[in-house]
Length: 447
Image 1 (cartoon, one colour):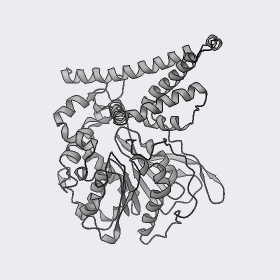
Image 2 (cartoon, one colour):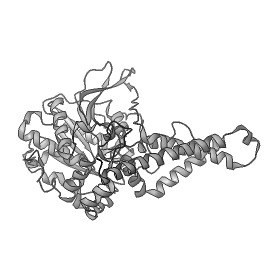
Image 3 (cartoon, rainbow, N blue to C red):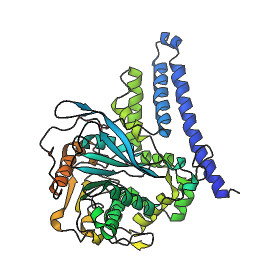
Image 4 (cartoon, helix red, strand yellow):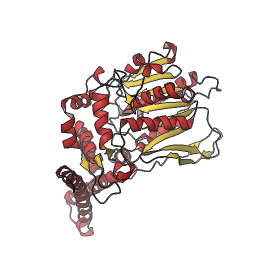
């Protein structure tokens, strides 16, 4: 029999989906009504505004339940040929796949990069522009996490320890010479996975580990995220945030932290910025200036596409990474075995932070350098990007112009015996195919 809490969770989950679909329907209705041909004879802007609001509302709510395509453009080689990019899973698991972006008719690149995508409410496609910027110079792989509502309960649990073990398996599968780039939330778990390999299988360790805007030590500098984590008890989080997947999905009965709830938190953090963006888009639609691929649509098609994460992953992240500081205290365990971060000795380590990052503030990520006491000082470096917010340090203008060249240089410097790849620091930059907003550099976009 379903418990009261389980019934409440199902009703809450379905209620959110009902509100989303209702808003989508209202948008479609307003678009159809305001676009009725007869109203074109009436010289009143109300009908154009109604249709414009409807188009924006319908699109915004419709994209919340659809995983975006990777849609990676062809890579142009030095001889001017276009090379199509194929997205190919190379290792499939219940909760996430290891995906390779294979560039057709191109020899493997000496730089092999694993992008560890955050599991924080958005799909891995949030890193599309990051992938696109690295593909001309690297063999790129990414952790493509699955939407928890589509994973049957029979697949079992998935918490921070399982996530860490997935990273261990992915890095081991890619083999020696891999360069791991962990972005935001997975940075502490990528550090733990590297420590596990250092202890159990040293030859499978990554060549370098680049941590970008991650909460290695959340208490190094307080943000709204860390304040929330300390203010709420685990019981409150369990009761208020966790819901049970409804019966229309494959994961029916699974306890999750819904993507729609996470999206509400993201938007609430910068409500004025998002409200202005949507109002401006309505007026642009009414004036006929909006287009399918304009800046607003490119960004919000990705930003509004959200996924559920398992309840145990969300709760264990808050409790063990933020509340108990197990990584920063070097007290993390996986399957009952201690993970000694000081065991990492042969991996080059780089941290990247944004000066205006209000999600993972400066000081939280760079703490990894002091934690990795086994790595020589000449194999550790840090970079603080001025005027960059959280989004900008891995996919915005700061990433494209400043951070990406530094990351490639760092990888090249520690390639070991491999032949150094041709650097792109002073050469031509890749075409900007990323998503952006007018304020992508001010730290107002959350991941």
